[in-house]
Amino acid sequence: MDIRVLDASELGDEAVMREFYDLNRRSETFGREQAPFWPFEEFLGAYRTTDSGELQEPIVAYDGDRIVATATMWTPLVDNTDKAYFEVNVDPQRRRRGIGRALTGHLEQMARDRGRTLLMTGSHLPYADREDHAYCRFAEACGYELSNIEVVRYLDLPVPDECIQQWIDRAAPHHEGYTIETFVGAVPDDLVESLCALLGQLAVDAPTGSVDFEAEVITPERYAEWIEGVTAMRRVRYETVALTTDREVVAQSTLAMPLAGSEGASKDVYQWGTFVHRDHRGHHLGLATKAVNLRALQAARSDLTRIITQNAETNGFMVAINDTLGFYPVEVSADFVKRL
Image (cartoon, rainbow, N blue to C red; front, side, top):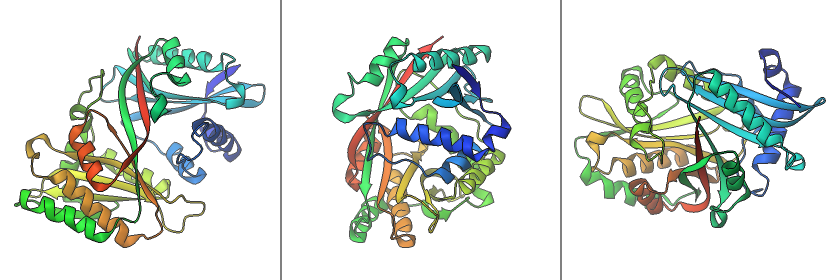
């Protein structure tokens, strides 16, 4: 078996990327056929753009001239430099032949070569089979331990506007002095710096199980790269923020969805994050930004059918907000960690 990182020419080869994508789709939807999976054009956009703060490496395992497994490794470059994160996908027809274990071992050596001492990976698991699923047993056999559980939830669209108004009204008395504003695409230049500072704190404050993170370094230049990546994926980003009187971003909620009319686009919306600065909690800004963002989304798009989110099950505040909005649990996303 030949395992290698795809080079620039292979990344630009649509046939190679289609084979990579098709295997990932077969693997990630195996046993969860109703789960969302991004269209090919979105996948290409994500893999053909760069992030100056994180190295993304697509890896393939060939048996002869056929790809039998894939992986992607993400390596932080300017913060959390003790860590690397990866995912592995083995073609369901080729499982239980040692391919996944060999590919995992290869990734671990890549991490060692980069001086990384903590490896993270994850799997989606059925809600009722979260402790004894085959993916859990595989991770344990490779020396990984369960680090964190996040619950994946769906919200069916549309949500009645009178319900959204009730949530906005419920939050309003608690955040006097703040303003709530929504932007499609990038936020205005005067808000970028404080938004970046806020987003950088997310990994520090959000529940992350047995792994501790340092603040992520997000510069305005890196933020611009993210916006370019969203465009390359043919998605649009709705960002609702809470602002202080001096226009500092202290809370945010992000929704991302395919552009209207994109060929083969799904009808799914992804909740990319909701976060309130630690010094501004207790003002219902999480509920306010989520509700206002939802209203803006529905006013612009009537074709979308559900929002997908996930939160650590120990994040009681965000779970309560999602319960209020009508999100319901579907499956879990389990995080595993190995200290090299």
